[in-house]
Image (tube, rainbow over all chains, first blue to last red; front, side, top):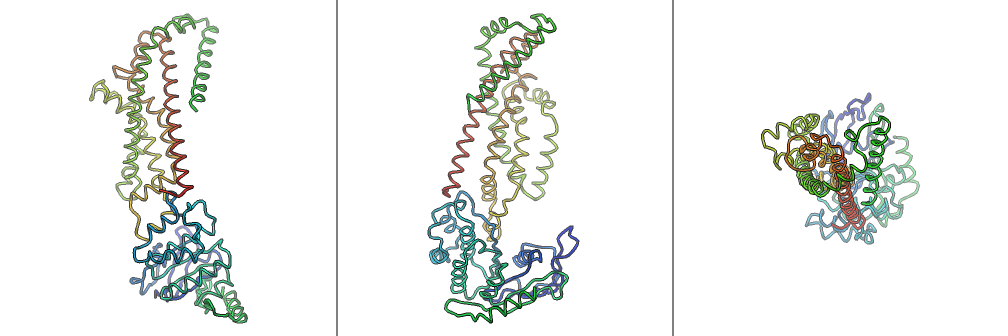
Length: 229
Length: 255
């Protein structure tokens, strides 16, 4: 688990900080969410967690043993390589046995022989997420990684991720209140830098395959998130 | 493509000739200053074969110089794309040196290396090298974040892969720059021959200048234009093949 204490960050040349005394913890096993309105700093914070952003002030504890990957929805595969060939090439030997399972459950069997540029946006995002899931990670940040994927497929993918990686940690960034309320265990709601505290943690319904989420509980969670943000 | 290039050149050439004859007529200039069409025709018949071989000589030097400059620009461009002190040094040096006219340095090269092939080759390569280098550095130092992100953060990024990604994504730009610099290679070779060499069409133009023989110069210009157009057309054709093959790779997604 990574604990962040009093994190401050301002983009060079910006008038206001993006992160202002932010304190929270991430990296606990399970499927969690980072939620917030556009521009509150979700991607900035995600990049910071992944170690891709420097120049911030504050304390970070327990970072070292954790291997963090950050995937986002605009990533592309190199044009010279087919989807299947690329996935095979970038998957560590120990995880190769998982390729077929992930490809099939993500509905990507038909795409495996194609070039990335020939795929739809939803297929591209699924392929990109699949190659990250095949890496050796402790925490995977999914920054709108399932954008442009239909609701039923998204549900299947999230259930599959939960079944396949119960010991790993996921931080799912999405703008859908209903989705994060239903599927996520903890929802870290990031708010504007003027609000105190800047981040609040709300318990989600953590839906898994076969479990029936009570509609009233789901609505309460959604209301809590909306009120918090 | 080839016939289009040739057609364009012949059109421009004859417009130029018509302009010269207009000036000759308007100012009543003698045949000594601007020769008459029969004079040009007779000169062409007399010197055509000799000038043809001269142009082929020049073109061969230009092609070798062009290939050399592409190879040098690729190597230096790969180093110059780096964000460390070495890349920074190469970029700064390239920007400063390219601002200096190579033609002004050419006499020094002839003094040091003589009037043979090496001087012509060096000047031709240098004249088209810097524009190529600046373009290569620009293209190769621009990150393709959407593709590179995964490789960087999974620890798989190597310099060869970085160059491959950036070159692949900018293949059409690279082809255009390489084809465009062919004209510079030809210009560089002719300029070097004109300044101090003892062979090639540039040298023949210098002799014609000493003889004040505009007919010879016009014949030389005609042949230079035809062969430069041919070279450009061949490069464009090769570029189209590479571009198409590259596009097919992208569509099929095969390596």
